[in-house]
Image (cartoon, rainbow, N blue to C red):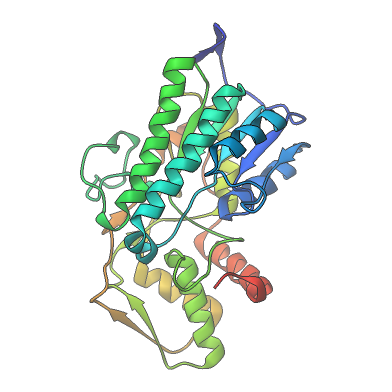
Length: 326
């Protein structure tokens, strides 16, 4: 429990008529949060595209927050990418995310934002953390080198939220989602995460009649996948039911190998060719399964199965293929 203006704070239902700013409202996570908030009856949801507001611009971010005066904020804006993008552009992932986070969090302090949820990533945990990964594994070991710059930025965001709690008594919280997928994901060949990259690769192979598809690595790493609509539901649940300094893991509590997910995607898109594995390419972290017992104890569990989520995502991809990036 935190103390706001000397008064003890306890979480509860959010005011559906209050101004609610979703930073990154057009992205995978942010758009899902907007859908969830609309479904829950929120009437004053605010968002700005990166063309309208560059959150890396400190003055512009402060001016926006002063104008809008949001009561609630979800910080879902971030520069994200897969192994190749993170490995190739570590300075960009570190610098851009640090600036976005620092600007929004500092501006939220100045404008006295009531409740704020910072969204990180499960890559914050050590490469060889115990499996499933509990929240207290943070800062206990070395990070995965292929995305350490991004992870450090997200760790800084968690500590920024914790510092705001300690210094100013703000009832702000952090959530660490597992690998996410769903509508408005990035399906570009060079910048996407593994699941949307596989969807695009197998779908294009099915359309062209290609005899084989080549994926990176060995296919043996295990990954946990959560649909973005489940993630959005968890975010609202946390904002209304949790107040504490620890980040909260958000996931399904189950995982599959990359080879298994590739086979499932091939089946969903109707690809019948062969799959080959380029073992000269990196696998990344061998396993990354989150311990979601804290979230379960707060009364939330995921509802969308992996196969059902994939079918929804592939359908969305087909409907929007013409306008997707890359």
